[in-house]
Length: 117
Length: 113
Image 1 (cartoon, each protein chain N blue to C red):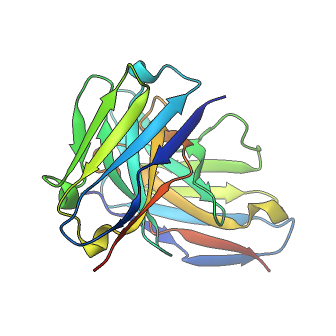
Image 2 (image 1 turned 45 degrees about the horizontal axis):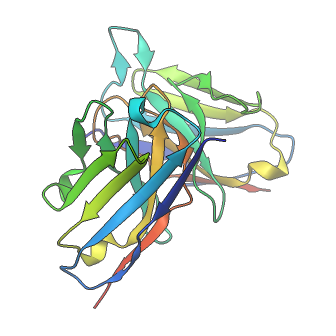
């Protein structure tokens, strides 16, 4: 069964940091591109990052320099390091798997991040 | 960045009737090299993650009922639900997967009339 399970979310003050994790199973992790997508409370979906299997990484402009994606193929785990957090980063963060056409065919349940003083 | 504009914001349709959601991109998302439009549609029900319905504008994801169809090319796209079922109540998003950032539309909330 193809599955993604996120963890690491929490409540943090502005300027703080968190590291999100996404553990994958049921597919060949090392050859899959993976994404982070977020959804602020009551709002729509916002693409955050693409972590390609070849190591290339792409980010939303508003998170460049603050968020860093990485992957550990030996652990089938995707990461998102969130630094210098802002209140507008408050959201449910999903990881998702590439369908082979840069669309997203498998999603986790998400991990919530709340940035508040 | 490519801006994705969906319409309408919300839609109420009777059971068994057709539902149509539109999506427009601010620039073409048609790749000349393979003649494919990089447009995806997702369904999101309350408390659930999104579900991929359609990619490449008209390719239905495995397991998606055939009452869901996608059409369009270039900058104008449509998601059609041919005969609305109760379980289709959800928010629907379009997304361009042509170039990063892979932007989403703001969503269309579909309800039963």
